[in-house]
Image 1 (cartoon, chains in turn yellow, brown):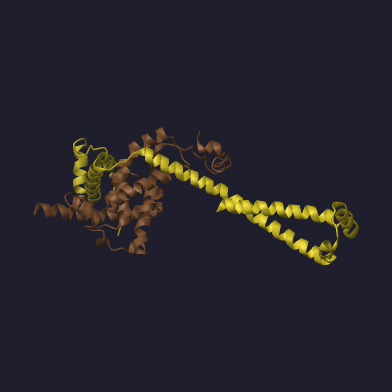
Image 2: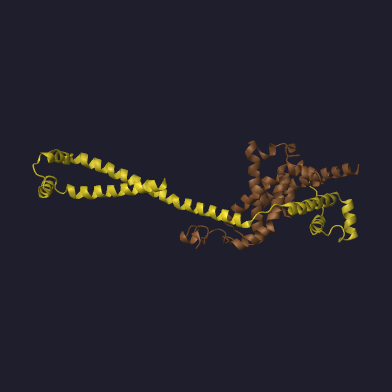
Amino acid sequence: MMLRTCPREKEVKELVERGQWPQACAPELRTHVGGCRICGELVLVTAAFQRARAEAAGAAKVGSPGVLWWRAQLRRRNEAVERIGRPILGAQIFALAVNLLLAVALVVWQARHGVAWLTWLEQLPQTATLHLDSLWSSALLDFGWNWMVMIPVLATLALLGGVVVYLVSEKQ
Amino acid sequence: MSWESVIPNVFARDAHPNASRVAVPPMDDEAFAGFYARSARSLWAYLARTSGDPALAEDLMQESYVRFLCATLREEGEVAARRYLFRIATNLLRDHWRRPRAASIEEIPENYFAHSGDAALADSQMMLGPALAQMRPRDRQLLWLAHAEGYSHREIAEVTGLGSASIRLLLFRARRKIARLLGEEECGREL
C-alpha cells in the first residue's frame, strides 16, 4: 500500500480535534476536503473517534483516587521491605558460611594435634574429687595454650550459631 | 510520620545525582487526586474501547494508576505523566491479550473481538463500535491514540514501544481500513 500524505492534513486534523469542523473553517478548505481522499478519510475517522471518546468518557466508571493512592503506598512499602530484606539474606548466608568454615577448621586443627582432650574427658570421671583447682591445673599442665585458643573459638561458634538461628527464625 | 522516614534512603538509588535523567519526586495524594480527576475518564475510555470490555477496563485502569504511583517518573509535567500512564495501560492491555491465548497478538483473528461482550452490543448503537470491532487490537490502540487522544507519531511510539517510522505506515493502513468500514456503515444506514 502506497503511503500518501496531504500537506493540509495537519490543519484539518487540528480543526476536527478542536471541534471547529466544519462550521469554523474556510469554504476553500471544505472544498479541498471534499476532493481529497486523504483529508476526507481523516475527517471521517477523527470525528468518529472524538465522538466515541466524549461518549465513553461520559460513561466512565471512575472510583476513588484515595483507594488507589493507599494501594500504591502499600505496594511501595512492600517493595522497599523486600529490597531491604535482600542484604539480610546475604548476611545469613555469609554467617552460615563462616560457621561452616570455622567448624571445618576446628576439626582439621584437632585432627592434626591429636584429639588430646578426649583422653582428658575419659579420665575425668575417674578422678575422685572434681575440684576447680585440679581442673585448672590439669588442663593447663596437660594441654598448655590449646585451651586459650579453644575457648574463644567455641564461644565464637556459639555466638554465630545463635545469630544464624535467630535470623533464620526471623525470616520464617 | 511516613514509612519512608522510618526506613531512610530506601529510594536513594532513584534520587542519585548521577542518574541519566533526574527523577521527578513522586506525587503527593492531593496532586494525584487532581491528576486522576483529569485523566481517569480518558484512560477508561481508551481501555474500554480498545478492549471492548468495560469490566476489564476498570481493572486495568486501577492497576495502571497503582503502577504509575509506584514508578519513578523521569520527566516532569502532566503531559509526560499522562503519556507514561497510557504507556502502562497499553502494556497491561497487551499482556492481557497475550495471556489467555498463549499466542501472538497478531495471530488473534480479527473477528474474535467482534461482538464480544456488552460493550460491543452497546457500541452497535453507534457508528464506530462495529467498525472498531473488526480492527486488530494493535490498530485499535494506534487509531485511538492518534485520533481520540490526538497524540503525535512520536508520542504514540513512546506509548506503544513501536518505532516512529512504523507508526506512520501502520496508522495509515489502519485509518484507510476503518474509513472504508465507516463508509460501508454509512451506506448501510442510508439504504
